[in-house]
Image (cartoon, rainbow, N blue to C red; front, top):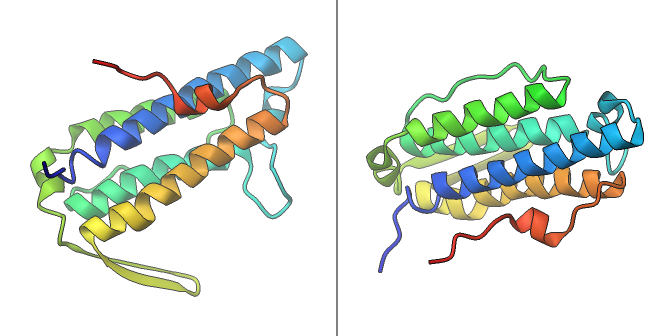
Length: 171
């Protein structure tokens, strides 16, 4: 049985964003319990040359919506990357999910062979839609989700592998 682009894109991005939302909620709860300034947790990084937690959430949002835009040809919303609170990041995740779910599956499915060209800085690459999704877009998205998880874990938030994997819908 073949899988379509719509089956291996939006549902995976939405699931990952919902997991990220849950992780953020646990981070916010942790900050409150510890008497921590929430902005300090949102500014936490794994290393000096890495983006902070808030930017990891923004990049996960961007990675998912830009991937769907590039594959489907449907223009995605632009966000200012100015979120400074857990609530604002949660709203961004919700808006991203809402947009992802609004993109017609037929638009994604016809993007399997669409050429996707990426150019920024010294990086340049060109893919067919399916290769882009599987070898670049999904790994990039999950990099930012797992980095957000790692920052929270590194800061003492009590989360584990099952929190990262999220709930399973079993038939």
